[in-house]
Amino acid sequence: MSIYLLVIFLLLHPFYWPTESNRNNGLNGAHLIFAVFHNPPYDAVIRKPDGNYTHLGNGPIWTSWLAEKLNFTYSYRYLFMNKTMIDKYGESTIELCLRLLADNEVDACTNGLIATPERTKNLDFSYFIWTEQYSMVVPQPGEEPRLFAFVRPFQPAVWLLLFITMIAMVFFMSLFSKISLLSTKKKNSSDQPRSKQSTTLFNFASSYSVYVLNIITNQGGNVAVAHFSFRILVGVWVLIATVLVNSYSGTVVAYLTVPKMKPPINTFEDLAASNDVEILIKEDVVIGQQLMAAKSGVFKTLADQARRNPDHIFKDQSKIDIRLATGHYAYAFLQTYCKFFVASQLKKDGICRFKMSDPLTFQAGFWSVFLQKGSKITPKFNDGLILLWESGQIPFWVKNAVSRAPKCFFKADPRSALTRQDPILLKDLMSAFFILGIGLSLATFAFLVEKIVYFQSHRKSVVTL
Image (cartoon, rainbow, N blue to C red; front, top):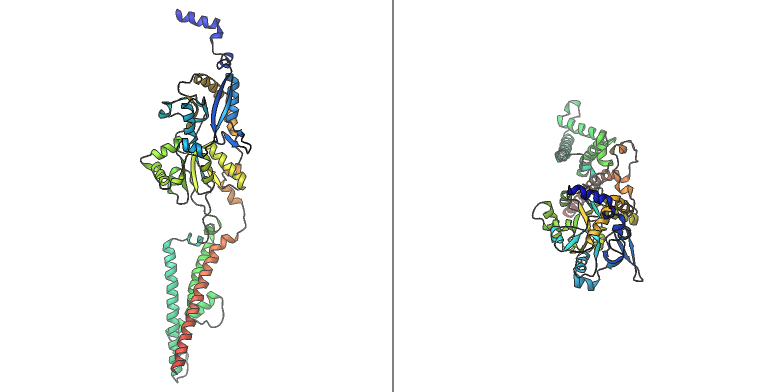
């Protein structure tokens, strides 16, 4: 019976409900001090030459909205780490915010922080203002050099057989030429007239080898097969012809004309396996803390990699941005930051040097405003932030804070490349010219060696005479 009376009483006295006007009167025009540091794109704090600050991003927008709803005024305390501040508080702006809250110098830090059991012991966390998954900023996978692209179409066993074939061809051509020379000397020493019946099997083999060489090399007349340099040239030419004919016929042409990209990095496992890209860690955020605290698995592998290079571990976000822009590192953080960094580098360089990986297998972050422990304004902030989250305006503001870079996030349809006809470029044929140069170089080297040996032997014969 008492419950029914209570319901009727509340219906007859609606002013007991937490109406919009009651929320607006909650802080009664109080003035609050918010600490904020540079954390683009959410809060981009830029110091001007005259000492003033420019504060951009969605941070000042939602703060203004909340101040209007909860009826309070506010001012910012911008946190920049100079040498004096670093000596006193360290490099972490997050740790500086925590210290200012503990000393009652500010009322809240509006950048947002993830509530953990350790942090909730000393801080009050509001209702979350933002949540999203983590990804990585990684360099765009480069194209593998095509200089040795001719190796790809064939297995090692095929190359071994080609090499054996070349050696065998040189050997048999040398054997045939030696036999031919011996036969010629024997004929010249005899006084018997030449007849068709005197043609031996060796002469036939020698003539046949010369005939085959004439056909293969598209030459006419006699071929000086006695020269070792020519045998090297023909042997290497057979290898080159085999490679060229097979590389530019059928589907094998793709090995030379279609670029082969380096393996993309989409997961922590891919990053750990990469020899070209290393990880950067911000140790005062949750994902960095979990990486550094890992005892096994890929997290420990990446953390050990960073420990071996202490300059890969940071607390200052601006230093991470500078190092990340070199194109040799990966950094795991919220997807909005990843999109912002990729777009900013596109605007700076004019090309897509970076990409965002697939979502990581890491728990999504829930970011909240953190206030003094036991703060009286925490319940009021929760009321306002719940209204703000339910209104759906924060995702709209965050999206507008990030520049558009559609070509850096565009995933091409593989079928579109099949219908596009692109001209063959010089780099497509680089490997073919490379093996041609190998053949000519070997032939030239053998020719020079023969000439050196010949002149040395000729000089000795002259001296002997």
